[in-house]
Image (cartoon, rainbow, N blue to C red):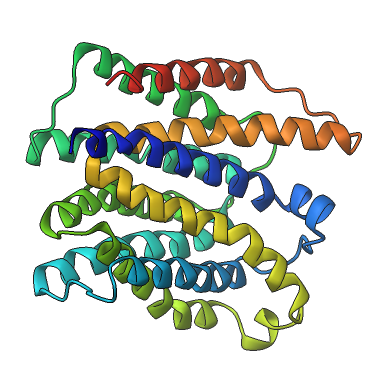
Length: 303
């Protein structure tokens, strides 16, 4: 049992790796260069593909528990809550990016673990060692460093993006907390993920309301297939994140995952852009973020 409890770090590391690669190829430039994904591919269609990519992992989860899905009302409610918060936040993010560039929207969203830490400390009474507290602080330092925009050009014509970004911030911060509650309530993590996948698929019609069917299907099957290859990494990371939250502390896992995935993304992006002959020199804040995130991983490996 002791060995199982320590698996949270392994699951968190898988999430960090898959999300880091997912972030890298979600960038329109790298996606176009290495996967041939059109830069004008609609973000709403990306959501549809992402939701569908959750299905293979959900089937694997069902096989793993031999089809014995936890159907108790509390489990269903909490797990669907996790899925709806995550998927709903993703849809609202698409709307926010219509009103402001990503370098303004993402800094506000990337510190969502603050909400998770506060909720976990207040309601779950989660505690960590002094060394663990240092790790959490370093994780937030890394998140803030990666959130500092490297390009200050551009302007925003509306304040609406602030409201929309705040909605995503709150949704994703609460999601990690509710995920821990769901894991505490059910005997298996697989049931939580299955309901998360169901919630993601349920919101697909909303994506079709944001864009006309003609716009969403204008790229045939080739582009969505390539996007699916990228989005399945996100689904796998979400799957292992559920396991990490089952065996670990939400107030540790949330900042750890959000701090270290950008490190992998940044390093991989630098290499891939350099191969393509493009300049890819990390900023000083990004370098500081890498150092803080790596230190954070080393600290949490001892937690």
